[in-house]
Length: 326
Ligand SMILES: Cc1ncc(COP(=O)(O)O)c(C=O)c1O
Image (cartoon, rainbow, N blue to C red; front, side, top):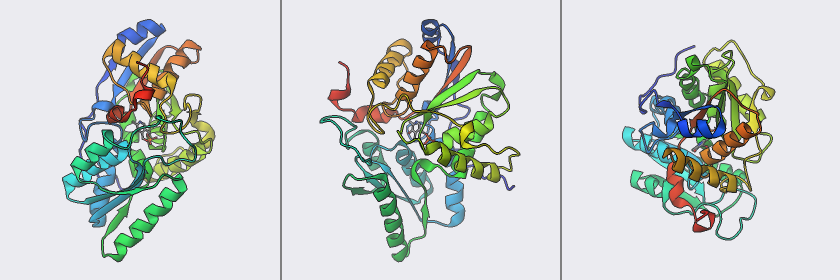
């Protein structure tokens, strides 16, 4: 294999520390991996993926990067920062609410503030579509990329969440930061699959259970993650290949759907902020932490556990009043 080129963007390794208050409350040994403090583009897990995606963008000679996602996407915010730094235009095809269902009045994140505001500061070229499905969004991404190519731009397309083999490679390397710590389990928010794939392959053989808490109510994602994992295994010449059944994706904490804060997540967000002074985000990490609390209380996890904080905190500022408990 040729080793993927890394552009250092993040402050690594991120801090890993014990949560004393949470450990007392749950009667177990709970640690936190602070990828909310990756230190680049307002922090979050996407910085690790971009360390390997950006060199590939530059090697391709692209002058424009295009991706898609929700208007409050954390990936788009960090991609915008990375592109601005290397002088490549970043175009983001987005919807306020890219999903099939209706939300109750006043729920879901607002389109303003949060990541959208940070993206404006970074100079992201937004293509804002009316609300629709993920499939429409993916189609529009392809259409806009074709249009840009017709205009003579050299375009590099990145799928939602930066989940390519190179993105997952960032998390294969991240796993090295906790391999020696002998955790019984690592728990984190899982959505487009590269965090999950990288950690699963990276911790394979250590005895650490890799427990993804889903943020999307789509049971087929384990198959998609497994395909992504196989492309990672090929990229990194790993000797092992894992299947969908090797992925633990827990759908119990999604709540009403992708992009909609849940009551349990909101309670977890407020609990961790008040108990440890650490903020989670309402769409991903709060649901994952709600999962950790429930699993601890049900006896599904025990011993020494690591919560991998994947960031996303700017989305707090796009929450509606209806979703705050007070
Ligand atoms: C804050 C946060 N946590 C977790 C995730 C999930 O990571 P992945 O897309 O690699 O599954 C995302 C992105 O989707 C995110 O923005």
